[in-house]
Structure formats: C-alpha cells, structure tokens
Image (cartoon, rainbow, N blue to C red; front, side, top):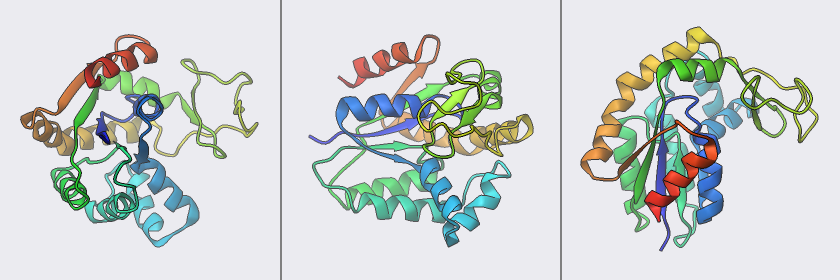
Length: 215
C-alpha cells in the first residue's frame, strides 16, 4: 500500500534532511513546496514572480498559488506511488485542499511527522545556512561545512546565502509560522495522525525515531 506522509516543522527544522531519509527508505515521491516555488522564481514564471515578493519578505505565499501547484502535481503521481509532502500544508485551507486532492485520487494522509525545534535554535541554524545554486545542496558554516570553504562539494559552485536567511526575516517567518500553522498541527492532532519528534540527537537518530513510529 502506498504511504502518504506530511513532514512538518518550523523553518530550519531539518525537514530537507529527514525528507531525503524518508524518500529513500519508503520509495516516496518527494514534493517540496519550497523547492517548487524557488524553481518558479528562478525561471521567472508568473507564479514565481508572484511568490517572490512574499518569500523575500518572510511571508507565506498565498494559499491559492500553493494549492494549485500541489494539486496539479498530485494528479500526475501514479496511484501505487507513495508521496511525501514537505512544507505543505501550512494553513487549514491548504490542509483541507490536500485532503480533497488526495481523496480525488483514492488516497489519504497516513501520518504527519512534526519536527519540533525551539525558535532560538532555528535562528542559529538559518543564519549559518548556505546553499549551492546549481544543485540546491544545503550546508552550514559550522554544523555542516563544505570540504572547501564557500564551495559546493558536488558542483564546485560558490555557495550562496538565501535572501531570507537573515535574523530579521527569520523571526518574521517564525511569527508567521506560529500564528498561521499551529492550527494545522492541531488539525492533524485531532485526527490522531501527528507524531512529534524533538531534535535532540543527530539527524540519523532523528530518522531512527521516525522510522520506528512509521514501521
């Protein structure tokens, strides 16, 4: 049976790292809203230009834009292929839209992994985050530095700091996260789908905890 998961947490919680682990273990289609939106921004599409002004201001992209991107993608995934939703849903309207899109394809959300990280840890993580513009690989100046300072291990490209990875914007993003996405946590909690995981150990230890729950 195809496994459909949501991975949830504040900016910088490690959703990307854990998504890779989940994708590989359970052979899931990984849908990252952030990657899809950033690709649209990079390509200068109509949706991308609309999203850019919100992303750089630390605000959530409007529901109608995100829902359309995700719903269109869900319709293209084979029925026997599980899906991992990373960064979506972030609002109650998005959660309801996701349920509707999945039901239309005979699916449902099986579990929601909630990575719970304190705000100050998020600020420390994101201020030091660097990204490869060629392959989107993520590094950290102290936590996960590249072999050569400032250069991607895979592509040899100069690493960049995202425009929204500064403390002022990060704290705005956290305020938005807490005010608009807490209801989504409650929504899945009431459905008994939520599994909260605190990030007190290594990424591998966090993965082990998640796998134990899902298995």
